[in-house]
Image 1 (spheres, one colour):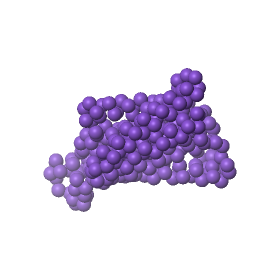
Image 2: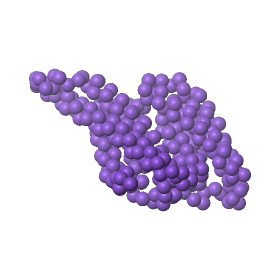
Image 3: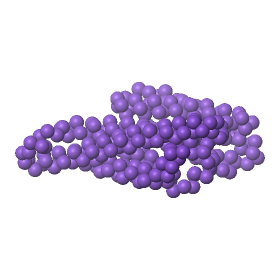
Image 4: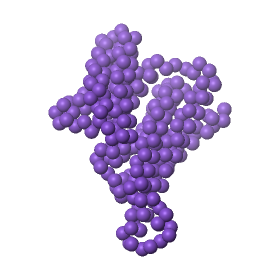
Length: 272
């Protein structure tokens, strides 16, 4: 029954991931065409998710919430149900921009953790770490460009308000262009960061089991990702533009920098 529980959980994770296609399409094209298929897949996924937890609970003789991975899996189901209820009562479809990635990430983590074992070869281990580092470098680079575009936005905005002629400011792109550049850099940075967090979690589990969960640098990484997710929602759906969005970009860059500083310990591993 444990094997069937894991199977249903993987099916749920696969169906949940359909919501990521909607989020990507919405961020890139501001289109809601994929929302109905995404919410339908999300609803079916929650049923398989519920079945997986029930089967695991029956097999264990108690509620499947006895370790970190089981608790994360249960949390994902609770979040999925709460989102579906809120969406059904209030037609709050925009909340899916947060619910879809968050529930998918938590479910994937719970589904993958039960099937990951030790590294088969050291080469695969090093390759996995390298991919994780490269993804985070790409995410940090995009975040840096987002912050730079936001900086020039504030500078250009101040210049336009003062109405003082200057050759340097005249060479800056228009405010709309700078805001669009910051938005696109944010989307790319969030995508790279999300994939990097998922890959890093899988790598850490295969490397040291569950010991990494209690580390402070992991908490900082997860907080940064959650804050990034909130910023994506505020910019794309809540209509935050201009100065507010620019200051959010600075905070994202600050948290991303703190995350990098806290993970300096990866360098000795890369040197092995």
